[in-house]
Structure formats: structure tokens, C-alpha cells
Amino acid sequence: TAQTAVLPTEDPIAYQQHCRQFVDEHQPATATETHLVQELADTSWRLKRIPLLEADLFAGAQDCSPARQQGDTPAPSPQSLVPHLAALGLHGARLSRQFQKTLDQLREIQIDRRERQRRDLKDAAAMLEHHKHKGIPWEPADDGFVFSKDQVERAAQRMTRQKEAGHIEHVRFGSFSNP
Image (cartoon, rainbow, N blue to C red; front, side):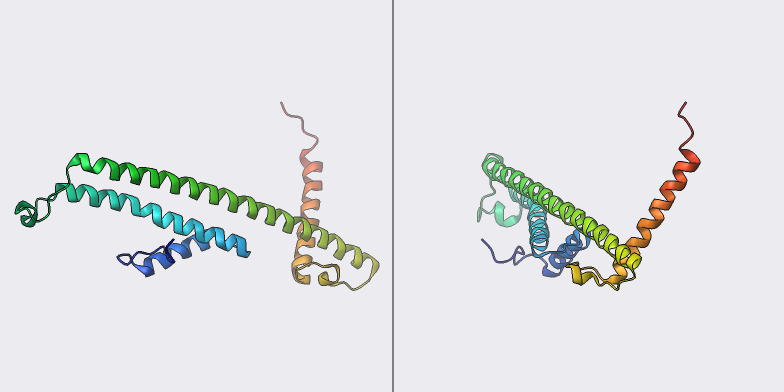
């Protein structure tokens, strides 16, 4: 329920860098993708905390400092650590499942978005070529496309080169039979 994933003892600059790494890796393009990337970063940040908490528990159990030896605060027994370690294990497993579920959801959304963009760009390139063939000026926005005319022209050129390369590949290599 915290407003931030950073605890007072943690470095906010390190957290910001951690978040930037997730944004750089996943390159969100929509508000939903941005939200999911932030959730990944926060979950990962919390997961990284678990080994530190475990180490603190063990260090507290093994602390033989003069203050502990004088009886000010008794060191926890190894048996008293079991419930705390079990809770951390459950918490880590839950966070790992949450991370994987969020990552899967993000990947699915991004694959769908990229496939839709690819199809739309192919459709726009076909419309451009159609208008060129008829000698009619055309702007992508006229047909609801969000691409610039330059993007569509580059896509049309790439598709033409791919088709030519496929034809040459068939002519040069298509007649060979596999041994």
C-alpha cells in the first residue's frame, strides 16, 4: 500500500536508474504498457530486497556484539528465524509469480501492437502504391493511418525489395533439389 517502492533506507536515485533500465529494455508505447513496465520495475525492486532481509535476519541471530552479550537485547534463536524466513520465502514466490504474470501480459500486448502496426503499415504501403499507379496524390491520414508519408514510402520500398529478393531467390535457388 506504499506510495513508493523505495524505503527510507534505500537510494531513490538507484531506484530511478532501475526503473529506467526497465523502460529502456521494454520501450513501452502506450499508457498500459508504461503501467506494466512500472509494475515490473517495482516488483523486481521488491524481489531484490528479499536476500538483504534474509541476510539481516541471519546477521541478527549471529550478532555477538558487547551490547548483546550484556543482555540489552537478546539475539534471536535460530528456531525463531524459521517463521520469518518462511514468510520471506512465500513473499518472494508471490512476487516472482506476479513478475512473470506481468511480463507475460506486457509481451502479449506488445506482440499484438507490433503485429497490428505491421499490418497497418503494409496496408498503407499498398494504398500508397495504388495511388501512385493512378497518379493521385495521397496522404496516410486521409485513410486513418498514423504513419508519416515517409514511413509508408520506406515500407513500400522495403516490401518491393523483399519481393524482388524472393523472386531472385526462387530463380537462382528454387530449382535445386535437396539431396
